[in-house]
Structure formats: C-alpha cells, structure tokens
Image (cartoon, rainbow, N blue to C red; front, side, top):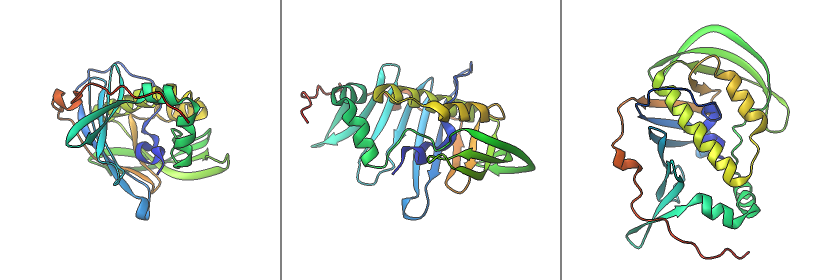
Length: 230
C-alpha cells in the first residue's frame, strides 16, 4: 500500500498565508482490491489521519511538536513518537517502508507538458479545471493522465497541512523530495489542490466545519521505546 495512494498529489507545496479555519476531508485512492478511503481532519496546522490499513486499528496525529501514531494496547491508548522511533531505527525505517511498498513519493516526477482541456469538472462539490498532464512517473517514463485542479480555501488548507506532514516525514527518513515537490509546486500555480488524478485518486468529500480541538490532543504521553537492536 503506497503512501502516495493515500495522499496523491495533494502533498508537497509551500505553505500559504491563510486564515486557518480547518475542516474534514475524505480521500479515495488506489484501484480494485487496493482501493482505500482515508479521513483527514485538519485545523491550525494540526492533522489527524485515520488509518487506511484494515489490519491497523489506530490513527496518526500531527501537531507542532511532531507526528505521533496512536494505537490501543490492552484497552489503553499507546502513543508512539514517529520522529524518535525513526531516528532510533535509522536507515532501517526507510527500508521497512520500501519493503511494504510504501513511499513518500507522490508518483509525479518532472512535469513534461500540461494542457488545459477547456473542460470543467465538479469533484466533492468543488468546480475544477481539467488539464491533461504528461509527467515522468516513478520509473522515469512519460505518463499522461487527466488532472483536475480546484480553487477553494478549505482545499488549500488541506493541501498545506499535508505538505507540512510530508516535509516532516521526509525529514524523519532523510528523504529528498526532489522532483516530486517541484512538480506539485508547479501544478498548484493553477489551483489550490488536486481534486482528481486519473482514476487512481479522488477527493470524495470536504467539509469546512472546524474539528473539535480535542481531536488533535494526544490521549497519553508518548511511550519511551527501548533501544533498537537489529
């Protein structure tokens, strides 16, 4: 299951000077048996992301102090500091992600060509402009798909929040976002976020009601993990 399938092209953009209002979005990505739906709550730079993995009963929280994974252990909440955990594991964290087919890469490399189709498409209640984009995929080969870019302040805040998450995760893993970040920055000159990318990613709903601040509060102190031994 690739992280890029969960966040699609909404990541990797520069934070804009918005008045933070917050909201809740549902993203759908993948295809067939691998198609998943993920709920993301966000406000004032904080984020709560529900797990899209059926075997994992928990959620992720991002605050100004870091990114945390919250799970249940014997009926009690357990909080893991992902930054501390990945730092302890060193390069093994990245290797484990790759072994599970997970990457921070959003699937977009260098944008080779982008053409406005002149069509509009409504996705999740937001009107967007349809473009045809040719880009270098993960293997460096040209790939052409339709992409729908929308203009909406809540969509922009979602985009910016996910951008912060991506940069923090990349720092934890010592990953260079490279061409992927440049590609998304270029795309977002045409809108506030991606509503649809081909058939593999779609924003299915977005609500501008601010989540309760308690949704971003850790239910327990982060656990101190024992020293990692390979």
